[in-house]
Image (cartoon, rainbow, N blue to C red; front, side, top):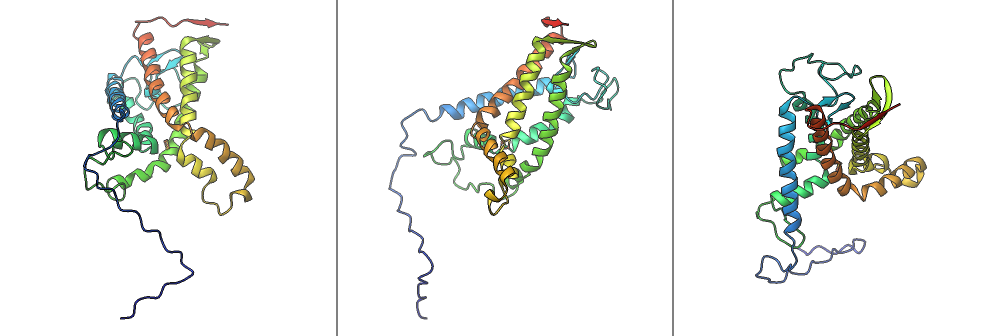
Length: 269
Ligand code: FES
């Protein structure tokens, strides 16, 4: 059989250089394991706190503050009348267990968190230039990890939740019908701001605004939005951690006030 003749129009692909025969698992001498370790500690801490917060089913509202774990309000335990209190005054399960499906789904499938927990929990790989723990790693090409692609759809729910948390932050300025500002108001405002920054810096959001176009310059408005989101996107990791930790801090603060362990300082006009 004649050998196939080379097509001069096709640029030949460069042949990758052979790997050096290195016996050691990694040549890195720095403390590369610190980042995965910190990630494990913080994420396990969040899961433990989140379980306690979601299962306690009480002390999540202190007028006018509502914990983000229990927003939107689904019971008569909150004074908010804008959302349907589908559970009345007694809820068969903690409302947080229903609500958290959406924010948790968004975070679990987040591109940044995926990198963080693949590295720290599965060691796939644990760090740059450190090999995978398992040899048969297939990436996200198969079930179940291929389901991570659902992230772009969770983003729409994330925007709804960002709106709800903003609504809670606005209500935190109204004390028994009067305008006021308290420590809890500031906590809820920062919480809403961080959630917006985290959601808007999402890679899916950036793609939604600037992706799918043959020429970005032909859509000047989308290009401008995309350029601004790209600035936020560079800090997505920071917003991911800051918003996660602040959600915990917000819930904890409201629990302290609602359970009588702390008195909220506030000023009412
Ligand atoms: Fe992190 Fe979308 S990539 S929230």
